[in-house]
Each structure stands twice: as C-alpha cells, then as structure tokens.
Image (cartoon, rainbow, N blue to C red; front, side):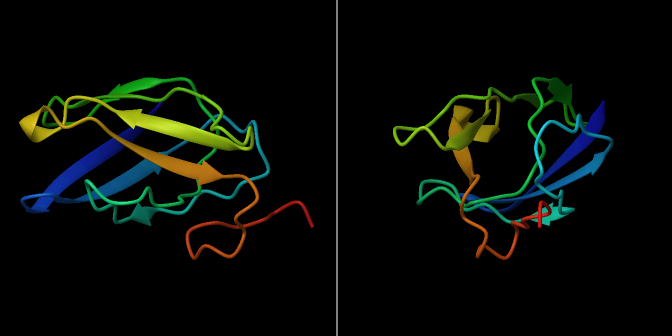
Length: 107
C-alpha cells in the first residue's frame, strides 16, 4: 500500500503527494509530487498501474481504476471523495513522454 496526502490550496486547486511502494505493472517511473488543477484539462501524471483504494489522514477515499481512454492508450485515475464532492480524473498517457511528470524507463 501507499499513502496519498491531499492539500487544498485554493477553491479548486489541490496538491497531491503520493509516497510508498506501488505495484510495478508498467514501465512508468513514479514521481513524488503532482499539482492537479480541478475542472481543467486532465494533467498527465506518471504512476504505476495499481488497482487499490487508499485513505489518507483526512479520510479521503481514493479509487484507482485502470480504464482505457477513447484512444485505448491511457489510464484514468478517478479520485472520489474530495471536498465539495468533486469527482475528478487524471490521465496518465502511456505515450506522452514529454510531460515533465512522465518518464519512459523502457529505453
């Protein structure tokens, strides 16, 4: 398991810190910090594929589902239980290696 900390900065701005061991099922390298902005385009993040539900210290339940996007190449992570009952998603596109939070560790 791993820990996810959610910090609210502004009304629709959160910082997520993820730490711990993740199940290695992809060749994606995990980066420690991401800054998602709610109600905007999904931020491409790098995280190893893992079907887990975690709860941080604030009691926020986070469900991760490996659902493919319309192009069949992405992974969506659904974060449920955030303040204001906002359901947001972030896409880790397996081919977007130019993203600063994304690394291709295969080659």
